[in-house]
Length: 177
Ligand SMILES: C[S@@+](CC[C@H](N)C(=O)[O-])C[C@H]1O[C@@H](n2cnc3c(N)ncnc32)[C@H](O)[C@@H]1O
Image 1 (cartoon, helix red, strand yellow):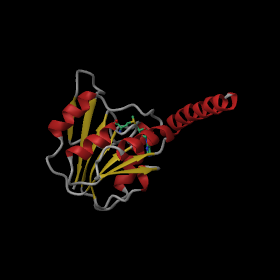
Image 2: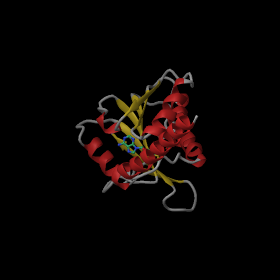
Image 3: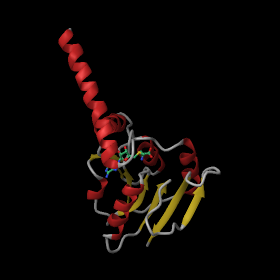
C-alpha cells in the first residue's frame, strides 16, 4: 500500500513538473480559448474550408473537437507537445466519435502546409514568431490563419474581431492566397 501511494505521489509530481517545463518551453500554459472565442468563430469563420485544418497547440482539445464538429468534411490535425494536455486530448478524441479528428504528438511546425486551409492558434509572442517562419517558409500557401490574442510579427491582420473592450482580447484573421 505504501509503495502504491509513493508511486502515485511520484507520478503526480512528475506530471506536474512536466506541465511546468512544457509551459516554459512553449512560453504558454494550456489555457483553453474562452467561450467568447467560440461564439465569435461561429460567426466569422467561413462556411466551408478547402483543405485540412490545423489546431496548432490543441491543449485539452476543446477547440479541436469544436472544429471537428463544425467542419465534418475536413480533416482536423490537433497537435500538442505537452504530455498531460496531450493525454487528455487523446482520450477525448478517442471517445468523441469524431472520425475526422487526428491527434498528433509533437510540434505542429513539422506539418507541411501544402494541403492546409485553416490554422487556429492561441499561442504567445514567441510561438507566433515560429508560426510566421512556418507559413512564410512555404512558397505558395493558400490558407486562413486565425490567432487568438497574439499577432504575427510585422504583419497586419486582414480582419480583427474584438471580443470585448480589452484591446488584447481579439481574434486576428490573416488570409494567405
Ligand atoms: C493557450 S493553449 C491553447 C489551447 C487550444 N488551442 C485552445 O485554444 O483552447 C496553447 C497550447 O499550445 C501548446 N503548444 C505551444 N507550442 C506548441 C508547439 N510548437 N507544438 C505543439 N503544441 C504547442 C501548449 O502546450 C498549449 O497546450
